[in-house]
Image (cartoon, rainbow, N blue to C red; front, side, top):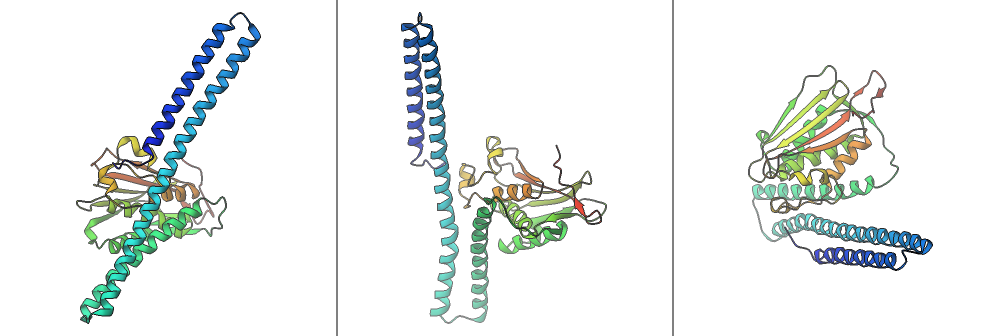
Length: 312
């Protein structure tokens, strides 16, 4: 785990807060001892010092949170810079090679394919950052239509296979039995972004061998569950609830080796909740793989409305 320059600042603020609280308590005890026979000064002194101690504690908590938030922002900027710089440098290198050397048609086509893949990676990063900015807006104009989750999931799987140059055997797609279409009412672009982020994470965090299982099923005739399971680096139990936070990345060596912006799962949960659903993560621990479940309300076109009540 990388030790950042803000770790000493966190320790300093915590130590300062503890010292100030201890000093306030000492003064409070002294005040009580000196004024125990004077009722009014005693009560006012206790109330004053109580407010002072509470203020010091809240101030310390706020400062530590701000330091950690700034640390996550810096990590995000570093990650985005890398994600943008790497494909740009690659594209430039291949363009310079094409410009300076006479290549065969086969080599030229190979270079074109690599540059196209790099440009798609660059576009995916930009779209992810822009999408995260959109999620912060209170109101968004969205056109919601009936979206076939089977077709959309297959489309996303094909995209991921091409993006990471994988064979069809790397991702296994299974569809559960269901009466009627497996349809969601929502914004197709947002739903595509959510599925792509889940699949992309499953592939990126499977460094040894990519073996991803994608299962689409209907639960209680009201919910559509898209589950994506990998055999990758896994998530420590203490970090399960944090992985959906903006800019958050699990601070383990196996995950820090993989470049990312810390926005993928944040977008997944934000999009799911905008559609009346939710997203959850499950892992047996580090090195034991991860399962991400995307839960969305099922839409019946003949009823003209979707069930938007979240399951308890």
